[in-house]
View (cartoon, helix red, strand yellow):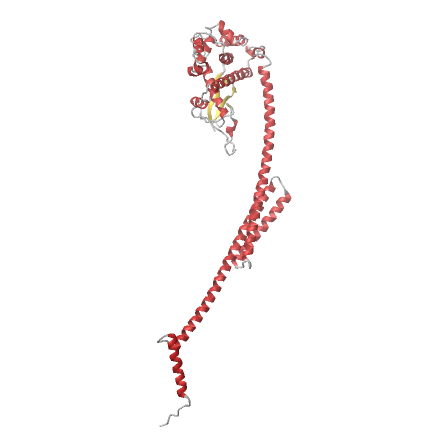
Length: 447
């Protein structure tokens, strides 16, 4: 057997190892070997390395997100710039500005190219190296483009405002000229002499629709004067004009308060012209005459009556046909409640009903209106065939042939769009036909 040769100091080395192991156990706790400690150290080093890589990855994600945000900001800024350039292009087209159009067109093309570049940058993931700075610059550019767009809109609105002012000035001058011409015509019609002097030279054989139209305009004028006086009396006695107008025309709508007068004109005309198509105004059974005799009879009454003052005539001829006409129309036109509020009692009404003739300004205005309607009726039956009266039913479409609108604004909607055929709310003044000629009726159109 080979003998074992001891190595010098072996026992010392083994003892040292054992001592180190024992000390390690004391530090790490029982059961923990050197291999465990080394393994733990390696795990700690690996964890530190993983944390380092994770931090790098988070920083990379943040940088990517900032780059995308900067790209989006540039995208919105470019879109705002395109919008501003397009608005500038539109403004330059009217009034035509060749240089402005060319400049705006170049700006639009440049901005579209910029949008294309941003698209390729996103697809290739080529983001701004300084995203924060790029983000701020993009926001500034977007705000500048928005401000530019608003400035262009303001200029456009100012231009439209000046254009509207010019149109208003032109229309005002035109309206003033028309008012002046109407004043001259009214002066010739009403102040150049009485009706007798206007139609003195007219004979039965020479009657024309123009003559009838003159008398019709006088009758309408007298109706308007009476309505104006009646509304004034109603206002002074605290009548609710809106409620009264609604009673006359329940379905009518009046965008302007002054349009209420048309409802009262409609009511007065309806009462005064009721029975106009009958020779005797439905006042009694008077003998019928042949056409030629009847024409001449009515024309002679017209010629005689146009010289007379209605109140003086009634005082002397209480039981005349015209007297019965005035009494009947007044009692139908003026309601007892209305008369009581005007005069405090019904004395005037009772006097008229008994054949009397009050001298109040209200009744005298009524008599002037009654005279003009009576003259128109006499002239209507002086034609062969006689002039016929017509009205338009509510809800019918407007026709320029038979109608004249008293509220022209009804031809335009709230958006200033033209309404081709508005509907009739009610007839204000009836129309007339004389042979093939048509004298238009006046209508109030629905809004």
